[in-house]
Length: 209
Image (tube, rainbow, N blue to C red; front, side, top):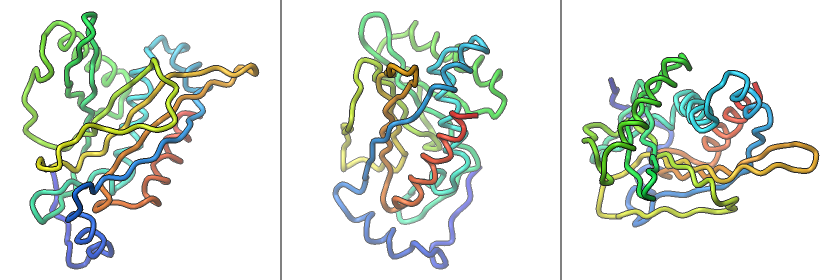
């Protein structure tokens, strides 16, 4: 379900009009996330760290209102739920785009994610399904690189207002502290730095829980 946003009474109406006309309306930041407690918790409950932090990402995305906005023509809709479209790798070095429904219940989310990962790994090609709706984030993991910045391949001719969230290689300091880089790219017509800051702060809280 989605609801039409009242643009005329939105305090960011002028911001939206300004940024949506740009050839590259996305902006991005890269931050370092402390994942010491999150990694330990994933091991404790015997789940994969990838599924664990994907779930925490979607919890945070669904918590911040602006991350649920999507552009359709000259209108903005707020989605009731945001799912994940994660790139899933295969043994042959290729990957496919997945569709993973968000569920607050972690066990249910984990089960559905495992099934979708298995489906992607047993198919070929980049598109193995259709995507009728845009109530997703574009999610990826680059576990080989401890990156400090990241860019994305994008076509300015195709309508796209989905946030893009990527994680890099987890590193361990001498004191045992674990950290992981996270890149967040969002449409500036839908949000500003303050909203990205709220998302990052809440995500870090979830990772520390």
